[in-house]
Image (cartoon, helix red, strand yellow):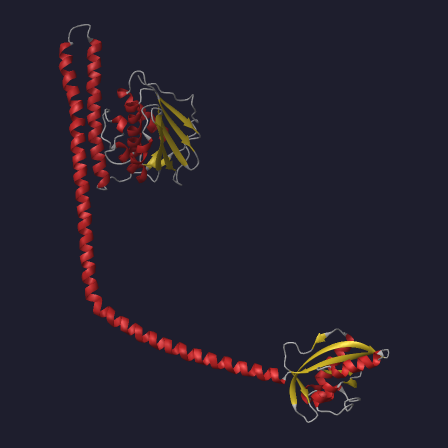
Length: 437
């Protein structure tokens, strides 16, 4: 069998309709499937215009498309995304899919059209669309029924809520009363505990300085003879120290009471922090042991802080007094000035605080177990914490047992502060170094 016969057999047995068209749009070949598809006899389409197979309304448009394809003959599928219609001999239109290709026959370019009748597929698609519409309609009806049932359920729930409203109000009132009673009971327990701790602490803290004052006052009378001046001075110092301790205890109680009652108002002014520290160091010189120094170190360029000077002073008095009380070595006060805040560090090399007790340091009446024999109320640091909070700052500490403690107070600057005068120089470690004896 030669090539032409082989081609003819394949051409005729192909299930797709095949029409070969020249550049003028004339059909030169059509296989059996194509003739049967369009209702023509064998070879009846030969010599006919391809537009004869196109419905009349789009024939002119098809001719333009055909000419355009001849100018750019690349394989493609016609009508992508559109419904294509073809025209049978009897005038019946039917849906088709068409793909085009180019072929050279007897030295001339021709267009090969592969045509598939998709009538059955369209029927199935239409049936699916109808089923989809029915499903949508059913879903809409179902949704409507669900909404109706939901509305009925909401009405039932509303009726139940109205029925149970009085019961809920009763339960709420009872629960509220129980909560208030529990809170009152907790407050009473806390108050009783504080009273017990206060009585225990006060009886010890007041008795000790009073006994010291009485004993030293009695001994002073015995040292009235010449040559006993040093002994008298020593007992006078003990009396002053005891009185200072009593004053500190009373100040702590009064401060705590005012803080908890909200009777302390902030009175903000322009505060020179270094000057306040100097004043506190000077005031505490009377209770500083002879072998102990208080040194002030200032880092950075200082500017005024808009804050409450009295509260800052109370914070410093408490922290430096603790350093004096719990350490026999020198105390360093470091003021670090930045553009945004002041950091005040009070460092001592004293007893230190046991690590397991760090979490209780700022609690009321807390006394570390290694400081129970040293006079104190356990209120000072609690008050300091409240003062720092009032100023919008924060306080933390670093401490190691028998190595000492450093408290760091951070006070943020306000936006409306102004620079110190030109005559105020920047201070460093060599500028201020106090020694109190």
